[in-house]
Image 1: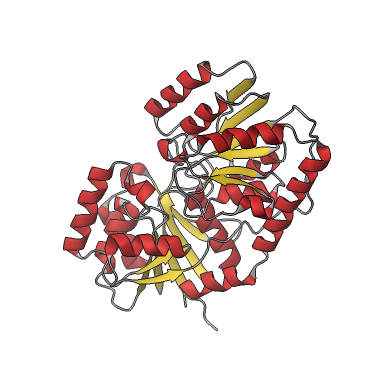
Image 2: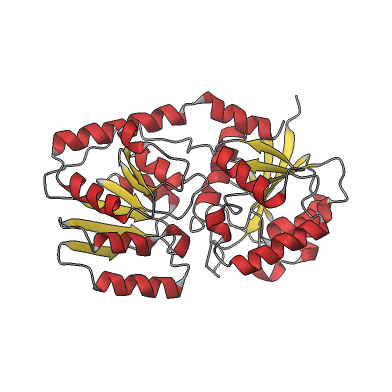
Length: 380
């Protein structure tokens, strides 16, 4: 049987990693379904916040990746309406999958040219961009944009991809009831750790980590304010590209005010193949994010046996009951402080129980056949 051809537009893709979740979401989707669908991807030839092209790719040409997937990497000077138009005209596809709401070259311009292709299914992945927490960032610009696309009817006849029922509700709240929405949870990494990493844990020792871009929505500043209040010894290492320089300067001011019992260190960015091994060196992942429509780093933490302390603004809820971590309201700073003080007092036995539960939970999630079927149905 001939495989359906799926053309994906995404601002950043492999070998990039600095854009975080969206790259991981699409890479995982492709890896799980590439034997059933013929994927082609159009993206930039640079990573997020970078200007130097990837050394391993040929710009403005189709490149075949080691997994057999074709990717067209557009250089900055070639990123124009005509380039997108010509690629759409010359590429054969049955389905188009667009990532995000606001991207000019990888969502909006493709939509303009795809209007004329009546036999092509167009799917738009919201990627959490219509959640209230996301809309609150640069809200005036986003509200103007959303009003404009309603007038232009730019999203008419598209299918929206929501990763959970909460995101489905967000899409309905912002865009109305006339759109078809398919719900499919993000797929996990196909390659997983085969055994639980073991790390030493003694009472009074706590190594915490945060892996996320440094931007207001990831809430590093809140995490640092929490750490100002803890009374135990904590090592807190954080990784990720600096997206918002002004925000980073605020974070640096709070780091300078931390008490002597807390050591907070910025470790730069991590490539995607370094994440799991890095997480395996820490006791807890601490990320009180303002909102995630999935949160790949949360699942990756659990995969490495690293329990998490997160906000309740993600799909990962009820973590205390599951014995895999803690999730709190951002209005409840005291509970974040208490959880850090408490886990600092864990001995090896207490920590091993928590770590093992996290690892087992991730294994069950990763091997859930329903999630794969949901994603398969997206393109049915």
